[in-house]
Each structure stands twice: as structure tokens, then as C-alpha cells.
Length: 129
Image 1 (cartoon, rainbow, N blue to C red):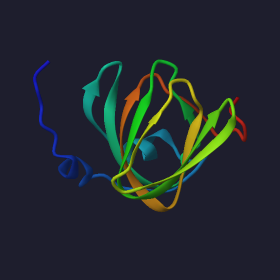
Image 2: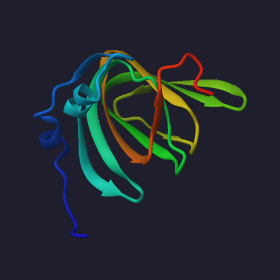
Image 3: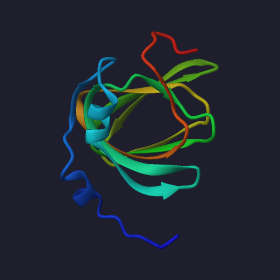
């Protein structure tokens, strides 16, 4: 695989931020807000901007790295001890453990970059477990 330098700002520039992300958001709307920056291990590096609730997701094949590029979000991770709620702002990073349901809530908008293993499971159920 050739080595590639990625200009994150250039990749984000043509994208449309996803406003009021929720259970009714279509795959096409989500795809228009996110870019695949590079392949990585068994998934990829992605970046995009959204406002609203991401719904629950988990990654059975590995940990996910989440880096906040701009804005702020609350990240809730369901652990054996109960929900862990993290406040993330621009410049922060967190590793979401493999196979843990998690969701983002960004009422004022956020731009994220993730290293995400695939496949990803998604649901908007109240409790995904």
C-alpha cells in the first residue's frame, strides 16, 4: 500500500455537516458528512461533522480511537459498571474499548476523526444491550 499524506482540512471542506443527526438520518445524509481519510488495520480513519445524537454503535473487532477536532460532544460508553459519560472538546482523544456500546451527543456540533474497526453495529434503541 502506498504511503499517503492526508490533508484533513481539505478532506472536510467539501462535506456538508450533518444537522440534527437522529434515528431518521439516512445513510446518504451521513455519508455526505463524513470522509474516509485512509484505510487502517481492519477498518479506516474517518472524519466528519455533525450536530445531534449519533445513536448507539459498537465495534466487535477492536477498539475505536476518537479525536475531537472541533466543537464538543458528550460520549456515553456502556460499561459493566454502568454508563460512563465523558465530556470531550477540541484537542481531546479517547479510546472506546472493543465491543462497548457508545454514542455521541453534540447539540452544538462537533467535528471528529476516528480510527474505526469494521464492521460497526448501529441502533437507536433506548438500551442497545
